[in-house]
Every structure is written in C-alpha cells, then in structure tokens.
Image (cartoon, rainbow, N blue to C red; front, side):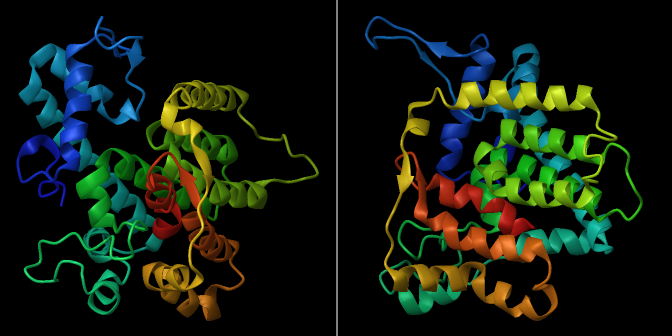
Length: 315
C-alpha cells in the first residue's frame, strides 16, 4: 500500500506529489526555516506549510542527498502505516492483516455517486479514475486516497487517532492518560492541523470520561502538558502566518446536494450503526461533524472539508 502510493518515487506519482517533492527539495537545499527572497519577487516569503512530516527525511537528505531522503521518506511512511495497523488491531482485537485490508478498501459510496449522479464524470472503467469528487468540489477522501494524495497529513493523523483510541479503550486506569492524550493531540496539530480540528471533539469526550470532577487536577503531568502547550502555540503562530489561513468562512450548499453527499459519504453507514451505537457520544459526534464540515471553508479551496473529515471517518 505504501509502495504503490508513490511515496519515495518508486511508483507512479499523481500530480499532487509535485508539490510535496518541492517541499522536500527546499527543506534539503535551504536552511531552516525556509524563506525565499530575491529582488524580483519583492518581500521575503517563508515556506509555511505542514512541513513536520518531511523534517527527518530532509535531515537525511542534507547529509546523504536526494535519493537517500526519498528512501527514508518511504521507510518513514511505511513504518507509520504499520504502526497504525498494529494500534487498530489492538483496539479492534483483530489481526493487523485485517486492519490493513480495512485501510485499503474502506470508503464511501463514490461508485454510486459516479454512476447515478455524475454522468459527465469520467467512467468507472478502466479503474484509473479519481472518483472522489463526483459531487463537484466536495470530497470525503477514502483512506487509500488520503495515502496516495496527502500522505504527509494522513499518516500522522491516523497514527494519532489510533493512539488515542487505544489509550481510551484501555480498561485499566492510566495515571497520566489525560496528559498523554493532550500531548498526542498537540503533535497531531503540528503534523496535520486540519485533521486535528476534526479530532478535537473526540479528545474532549475522552478527557471528560477520564476526569474525576471532584479532583480534576489529580494525576496530571504538568511537564507533559507544558510541552503540549508549547507545541500547540508555536504551531499556531507558524500556520496562521500563511495567507490562506486568513480566509475563513462558511459556504452555502443546496440541501439536495448536501443530503446526497452526506448519505453516500458515510451517512448511510452512520445511520445503520444507530441501533447499537446511539448511546455512544463518539457516534453522535461523528454524525454531527460529517454534517457540519461541508459548510466550513478555509482558504480558497475545500481542503478543510477533505482533511478535517479524516478523524470522523477514521474513528
């Protein structure tokens, strides 16, 4: 799965890899933080992006060159996917092979949307067409799509979510669980800030469940919390300096288009789980997030819809 995604350049890379290769290239060839300044381009411009995922590979590249950096990036991604599978296998009490198959094949009903609602969209066969955007600009990306197009956000977000699920599902009391959960979320924010927004409600649910409100500050590790706050604040200052982050608002959607998108991209499954999950707050939050996220816009595109949905789709 990791090999076929194009990470490292060993197989076909879709056009989105060109941007990610450029980020890795500049992190290797320029001092950190990367900035650009030439007389022709005017003011100094910094590289403000989710660069955390590439930093270890870029460091290898500074020492050993471009090919070594790409090989390490491939290993880094492969290790992340394996760790996600192991965490999920532990949480679901099943084998890692089954969780890998789940990651590969779990998706919304894009085929139905393409067949019946997007006649002008490219055909299903041959099976090389990107089916995710059959509903115009809206998209809830499948796990395979996330890995093939935005591995730098998907893999760390999956790993953080899987770690949170594993910790929250443990029956035995964990002395410092709340502090660790907050620290994991702050790391998710550093690597994949949009995905961390979708993950935040689940973190709050777990924190509420594990807090004794008679002594809410008991068993907190203040050093871990301080580190989490520092990571969050520095990441916030960095990301918000991007001009795209200044463009925020809501977008209007036709009710018919929204309902079709919601139902085919997860709503039907969510409703089918209602008889057994309706008391679970995570089930409630998942439906609420999947219903609200399409109306929120950040930047000029629909990146928020595609990436903030990673957590509710994965959870």
